[in-house]
Image 1 (cartoon, rainbow, N blue to C red):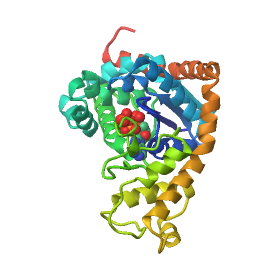
Image 2 (image 1 turned 180 degrees about the vertical axis):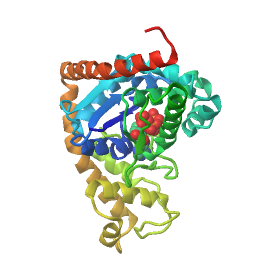
Image 3 (image 1 turned 30 degrees about the vertical axis):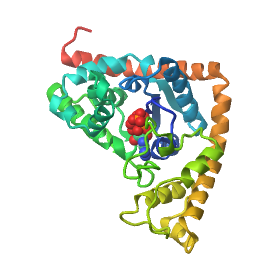
Length: 327
Ligand code: AQP
């Protein structure tokens, strides 16, 4: 059975970008693959966090994985900082990663522009830790949204370089990026991706937003001066809303265009708000229930960390031997 690895940072409240670009695709994979999903809290501290909020969001992110359908008995679900091998392997891989490569990472450039007062070394070496996350589990496939493609390519380069120097050690993973929903855009600046750490809450729909907030934010979503609902170049706002509507209803763009023929943007925006609110309601209910049972979530974290550590420590020992450490 092939292995899948992916994770999400508890750096903000998860939004429909994270949901459509990552989590719902993970769901489809749990029957066919050996799946390992992590809450990557160590990545989250590359940007300033309030400790209490980070802790709470770590629980909430795990609860969201389960609420969205990931079965803790079929998937390994764990928290990154509970498995120290991630940090240990990141150090070793950092010595096979070039400064120039890391300097070219778009996410580093974007995040350093946004956090001028805190351009820390962790933000710069973030992709090395991500490579360690993936390679520790000898993952074959990494299901992510479009924005993570460059980091997956770097992971492949680092794995290939390590294998060339020390002999075949790592499986070189492939990104798994489905066709639709892999880049949900901001509702206020539709040329930018939707991000959970965006300072403007009107730019995203968090999974736990109330029905009223969801409907209001879609009504205010930035579109264009045209009036017909159709997918076309230069209509970033409408294209984004059509993508979201399609993901929540399963309808094709053709069907959406026909369904809203002769109706204005106002009608369409309301319809998008309704289907998203309906689609998220059961997930919200389940997250609420799970957050009321911290002991259950801690049990999953503990069991997940034990399973992940078993796999990770084996890979790490092999690598330590390869590079010449006395083990
Ligand atoms: N807008 C998006 N559309 C589709 N997929 C997305 N993902 C993120 N944003 C979108 C996917 O969700 C997963 C979460 O990744 P992450 O938390 O490790 O970091 P990220 O990609 O940087 O996500 P955010 O929401 O933008 O977080 P912040 O604001 O903290 O940086 C990944 O699979 C990602 O592709």
